[in-house]
Image (cartoon, rainbow, N blue to C red):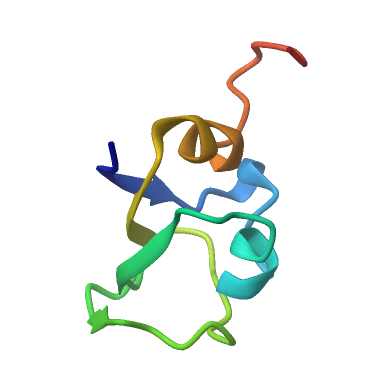
Length: 79
């Protein structure tokens, strides 16, 4: 079933500079519950057009396998 996760937008993640839509448009199960900006400001149910910056954290809910595909690959190589 769905799990809660936090996705950190880091410089090296390849996610900074994109929108929430860019990351999630291919997923079926993932719902964005909130976005904590690097400044500490928390947005609940952020718009999908929101631009992501390094240091932001996305709070999401979704199926584990889809979440794994979004998370920056930590040198695991392609499966």
